[in-house]
Image 1 (tube, rainbow, N blue to C red):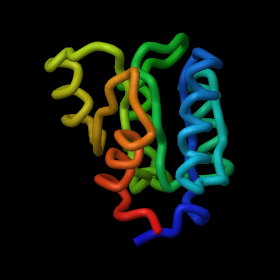
Image 2 (cartoon, rainbow, N blue to C red):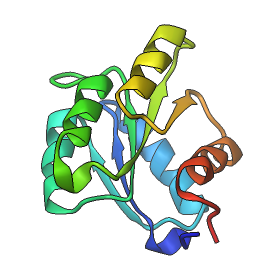
Image 3 (spheres, rainbow, N blue to C red):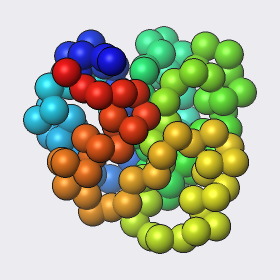
Image 4 (cartoon, one colour):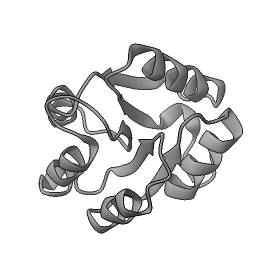
Length: 129
């Protein structure tokens, strides 16, 4: 069971407001090691320098969408084990199934509350202390 303060998280979303909302929620949970990226390409560069324990990524992004980013993570040995939560604003069952087929650990629907975010994270990395 990880301590929230030791968890390294990467937030990937092309909307600054969304990135800041997620970061604020993570900080409420005691998570402080947080990186942010505006698209999958930028995020992958960050990940190769500092592998996160958890990635929270939007689906709709320019350059590299959430599924393409997830595939890149799962095909790169150092990041294969990083937990991955895909965010989406739509309840598209086909998208959720595709995400899980490519190795997403969980799917987070937007908008979300901090307790829902916490539950999603704990469902992937274990109870936060």
